[in-house]
Every structure is written in structure tokens, then in C-alpha cells.
Image (cartoon, rainbow, N blue to C red; front, top):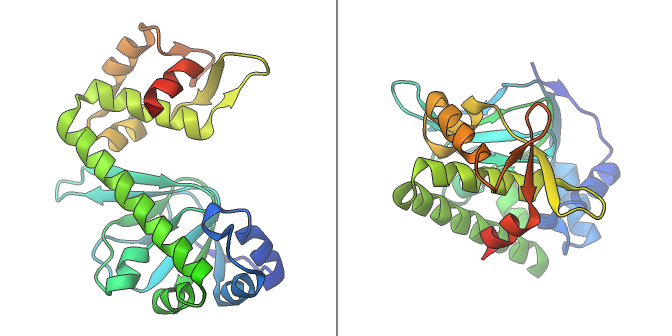
Length: 236
């Protein structure tokens, strides 16, 4: 059950400034956007919208995480993307008025700002800075989607798993002071399977193989160590 999260517009505008999408947007535009937002606290596994729902809202993660998923008739789920603070969903449907392209579900307790889709698109045209932010965000989403299509079409499940783990390490990992390795907490086997379009059993086997390589090293629990050099290679 969602609970209304009461935030003053000026405080919400300050939160927006922390996110890359809004870093070049002016104070007046941020205040306008903050006044449009409806903020709610959601529990884990709360469904925000289903694939095929009519276009209505744009969602912005203020804290926590949500997953964007596709599910077939047999119930098999693939995670298209994971969005942390600053992540947005619903822009494409807001632009063309079409149905939502995927489902959005919280994966942990989260605070989400929701905007009327049409009103948000009008806001993006309010200044050159808001238009530039909008175009940059859509471009990044298209680039990410093309990369994922290529990975699923051209790479083996093992390579997709490795790239996913390196992606998590780069986004969420912490480097020890003066160290040459990054530590990160891997998702569950089931979540990894959903992210690479495979099964939990296959991920369990492939993860064991990767741990025997020189790229990844198990630490404690679900913590994994990865050399900084591996992240450099991924960027190349």
C-alpha cells in the first residue's frame, strides 16, 4: 500500500538537483516541476504500472529502486532495466500517447515522484535546458536498449552474465582506499537470471564458472571483488 510522502516543493526541488537529468535546469523550472509532483512511499514488490496500461504518468525514483520488466504469457520475466535514484520511466508513452511499454515494480522500499505525463512533456518544453535534458535522457535510453539487444542477440549467457556483473560493479561498487579492486553486492541468482534472460539454474552454474576465473572473486556472502582493470576493459 502506497503512503503519501509529504515534501515541500522547495525541498523536492533540492532533491531534483542531485540527479543528472536536472543538473542544468534552472531554479524556476525545478520549482515548477516540484509543484507538479505527487510523492508516495511504496513497499517492496509494489506494481506501479503494467505493460499495456494507458499512458498516464511519468515516474521518478527519489529513493530505493524499481525494475522495468517484460513478461510473457507463461509468466517468464525479463528485467529490461533497474532504476535507482534519479531514474525515470514512462517518458516514451507520455510522448506518443501509446500504452506503457513495460511493467514497473519496486524492488525495495522506495519513494517515487509521479507526474501527469502530458504535463511533464509540456514542462520539458519550458526552456532550452529542460528540452536538452529530455533529449539527452531519451538518447541514453535508446543507446542502452540497443546495447542490450546486441548482447542478447550476439553474446552467450555466460558473457551476458559477466557484463551484467561488471555493470553492477561500475554503478554500485566501492573501491577500497588505495586498492586495485572494487567490491559490490551481487543480486540474487533469480534476479540475475531475469536480467540476462536465462534461468536461475543456468546462472548458478555460470556464476560458479566465473568465480573460478581471474576476473571475479567471492568475498563474504554475496559480496564480489572485481579488479579495476576489468572495468576499464568493459568501457573499451
